[in-house]
Length: 376
Picture 1 (cartoon, rainbow, N blue to C red):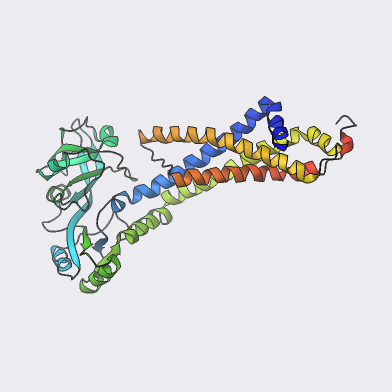
Picture 2 (tube, rainbow, N blue to C red):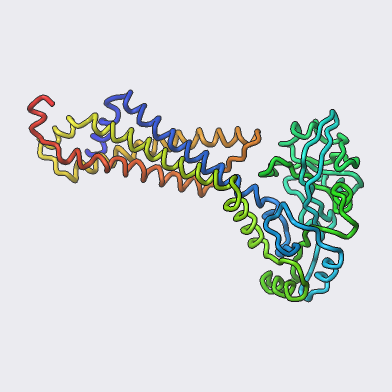
C-alpha cells in the first residue's frame, strides 16, 4: 500500500516528476563526469608505470615523478646487474623531445625508449605483429588518438624527432598522456638518438627479481649495493608520481576541487528538487494524517518516493555518463568510469535522495490535520 501511494504521488504531477528526475540525472552526470575526470587524470599520470612488467624501478637520486629525472651513468646499470637476486634488468629512457610534423610545425613529445627484446616497458594495446617493426632503426610507435596532433595520417609516415628521421610503424590504442606531450615509443637505441643522450645512459633501470626473491627484498639489496640512486617498487613509484601531480601541482588539486564541487552541487540539486516535490504534496499528506496515519507510515512513503526517484534518475544518468565517456575516448579528455565508481555513485545517489526526503519529513509530520478541512 505504501509503495502504491508513493508511486501515485510521484506520477500525479508529471511535470514535477520530470523536474525531479532531471535534477537527479543532472547530479549523477555531474558527479560521474567530474569523478571520471579525476580518475582518468590519476591513471594517466602512472599508466606507463602500471603497465610495465618490472617489479623494481631504479632512478637517479631525488627523483620526484616519472616524467622528469636526471640520466643515470652507464656504470649504474652494470652495478645493478651485479646485485644478487636480479633476474633481469633493462635500461629505459623517458625524455621529452621535439617532433617535426611532415607539413611543418613542431610538437613536444615524450619519448619512451625500451628494449624490444625483453620488453619490460613495451607499449601495450598494440596490434599483433607490429611490435617486431620497432626493432628496426628509426622506427617509432604512437597512439592513434594523437594522429591529428602529430600531423600524420597513420602507419608508414616519416617525421623527424630531435632532428633525426623517424618512421611510424605501429599504432597503440588508448595510451593517453596527462600532459600535452603524447608518448612516443621507440627502441632504446633509437631513443638515444632522438633524445640526444650519450651511449649507455638511461633515465631508469627496470628490474625483475629471480624466482623466490621478493620485490621488497631486492629493493633493499639494490639500495645497499648501488649508491646515489633511488629504488622503488612499482607500486611505490606509481604512488609517488600520483602524489606529486595531485598535491604539489595545480592540475591535480583543480580536478580534486572540481570533483568535490560536483558532489556538493549534485547533492544540493537533488535535495532542492525532492524537497519541492514533497512540499507540493502537503495536502495529500495532511489527508493521510487526518485519516489517522502514523508518522512512521508517512516516513516510509517519503523514503520510497526518494528511492524510486533515485533508481530512475541513476539509470538515466549513468546511460548519459557512459555516452559522454565514449565520446571523450574519441577526443582529448580522459574520463574513466570504472565499475567501482559506478557502484559507489549508485549508493551515493540513493543516499542523497533519501537524505533529501528526510529533510522534509519534519515538515510533513508536523502538519495540522485540520488543514484538510480548511481547504488548504
